[in-house]
Image 1 (cartoon, rainbow, N blue to C red):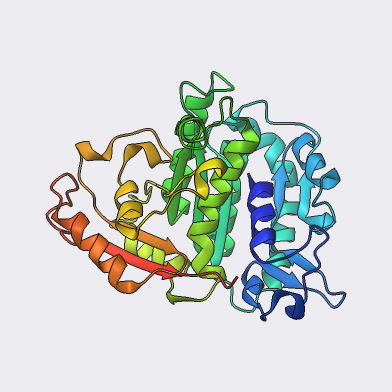
Image 2 (image 1 turned 60 degrees about the vertical axis):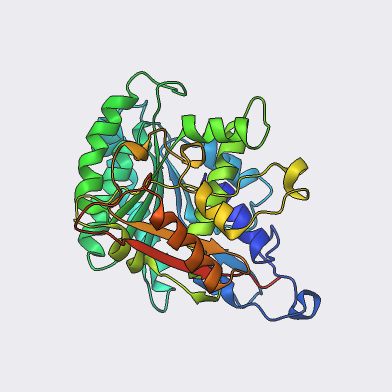
Length: 345
């Protein structure tokens, strides 16, 4: 998932797989927006401000030998010799304990290169031993050393239909305690919902994990776009917490994404701002299998991307407010926060 996100960031910021960037002359404009997520070196390379961790080496070795192997600093790709065997306790108390100091040291080095650290984005699963156990241990350490910084998680929740281990529900329950205490905001997604989106909207008959990861990468890219690009009304990491978290422990917002259009249909559809806005409230576009129409909303943050006019956004949100199908709790009747930004391209 992390590799898919950085692959997309590179494409959006015109950074090559070896870390070099297209010149301002060839781009036609000067683009400094990459500085939020990339560190520039004297050699002209752009290194991601990221640390990849896994307790077993297979997946990290895939990054080390893949198309983007020259992009990442070798020290930022950390793998152990033994996996957590889908066991929360192994990831948290035994195998994970062996590499946590190395991981924290590398995180310190990356944060030292930041001039104004806003916070951390943590990507992990709830079902695996490393994703649940080691991620909990990492969150505890980050809370101790960086207590004042925002910590946002992108978490893959297990689902009954798309499951790799019978113990996933146990791991999820055990790691939820850590996310309640040590995280500021957790964007939830599950494999079943993303699988159905690939199947239904993208016309992929048998979606692979690469398809799922690239879809999630698009969602993460859109959430972080206002951190990386200029816009009329941007949000930073703290704004997500301010606008989406009514109480400290209720910080699990539902993510929806629109429009999701297959490559074959992309050039044949003309979607308006009201259509895209309305689609965000359809369960078929949600990244988690649930039906919010049976309950009430406590807050809503709409992030628009592209050349969007403020009047169109305001009109679309006003229309949504008049619909009785979307209801807010009594103590937050107008809980919409809107942001819009654009890419220079």
